[in-house]
Amino acid sequence: MPVVWVAVAVGVVQLLVVPLRLPLGWDEAVYVSQVSPRVPAAYFSAPRARGISWLAAPAVLLSASVVVLRTWMVALATAGLLAAFWPWRRLVGEAVTAAAAAVFAGLWVVQFYAGEVMPNLYVAYGATAATGWFLRAVSAPTPAPAPAAAPAAVAAARPGPRGAWAGVAVSVAFTALMRPPDAVFLALALLAAVAAVPSWRRWRPAAAVVGGLAAGLVPWLAEAYTDFGGPVARLRDGSGVQGGMGWTNTLGMHLRALNGPLLCRPCHIPWDYPLLSLWWLATPVVAVASLALVLTRRTRRRHGDRTATSVGRGMPRVAVIALPLACAAAMSLQYLFLLDYAAPRFLIPAYALLAIPVAACAVALLRGARRRWRPVVAVVLGTAFALHLTSQYLVLQRRVGDQVRLRADTLQAAERLHRAGLSPPCTLVGPEIVSVAFHAGCSSEALTGNNTSTNVDELLQRARSEPVATAARVPGAPGFARGWTPCVLRMPDGADWYLYLAPSPRVTGSCG
Image (cartoon, rainbow, N blue to C red):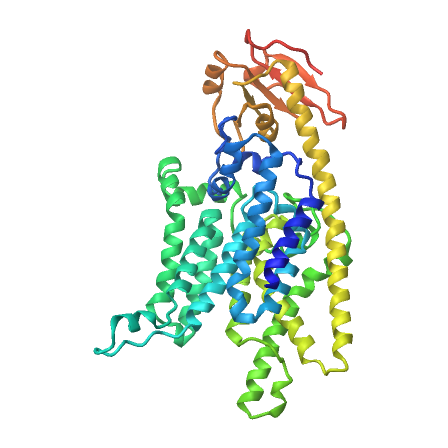
């Protein structure tokens, strides 16, 4: 099956283009620390969910090696790509499914995050699978009740959509485990479709969506009550961590941040390489054109137009194009109009869903072309795809190079911490120290900001039993640490760390 080979090819390419030795980033350190037996758990803020930590847990528990962890995540990403697009094979055909998977997986942001311990790619997988299984379920014939005289075996053998509904529930639940807000927007889009389409107004569609969402939200709700004072308080805290959610327009931010950096907050960067961003502007246009094409075909057929067979030849029915469009729009809403910053990974779920109508449009153009023009259309589409992959590869290499340098500096800072005398168990306090503390084997704490996790009294109490230090990129000791020993960690790039070490007989080392 073509989609299987696409998934295998993506996995192989991933192992070749992104270094498996890439150290963990900030958010990865938070997620991995939750399940690692070797480092203290970092503060887990309100917007986060533990699903991605649980996915990474088998590799983290098995080994401390980042190569083992990255290899495991690449294997999961490869399997996830196949699982996400698998239900679409019967909806749009093998060719469209394989093309959609290839178009989606060719994006630099997908290739980069395939090996990362981050939830956004898996949200995309869950949403794409849920939408596909939903369409499969509503398309399946409803089994008619068997006659009273019919044997029970005959009645049981009649086809039904139970397996597809289970796929909907499991996929929505999986999405909620990864990122609850994304799952809520996905569920709202699917429930709106149930209400909008008369033939879908049955209890099974709503039950599958709501049941899956409820099951996936259980861990988040339980943690909300135990750690945040309830769901409302957790939502309020989560909004605060993200800078306060409210109506805004960040389309321009997402366009400027499309080719990096990985996080644009605040997002006041120039728009670099506009030509490499044309695909982003073209994708919704092509997706809508795909819907217009299938609507045109249906309209012509209703009016008995004989040319309808050549208009949109090979296009699936309206719902198969319209529903992924609607779900993509719904899941993009919070990131485009509610958050006042941008990151390329935020829109990965929308890209996965939009890949279906985009691929359907391309395949329909090829199949609908006259025989003598079909090779020309194939060459044009192939050339466009090759240019797109090349541009994505160039962006990927630049982003990987940046991260290799940044994360290598983090490892060097952790080594210098050990030389300065901080060895586990130890505590590091500061606004930007999560990654450094993780690689040094220390607890990471913050006294202020979005990740506030302790206070001065608790910190001073901890300093009596283990090495404690404050760390920042600028000199100047906090008030409580003015009597502590100053230490400067000299970094090769000049971005030095300024440490203040609490008095402790265990702190023995040298700065530098």
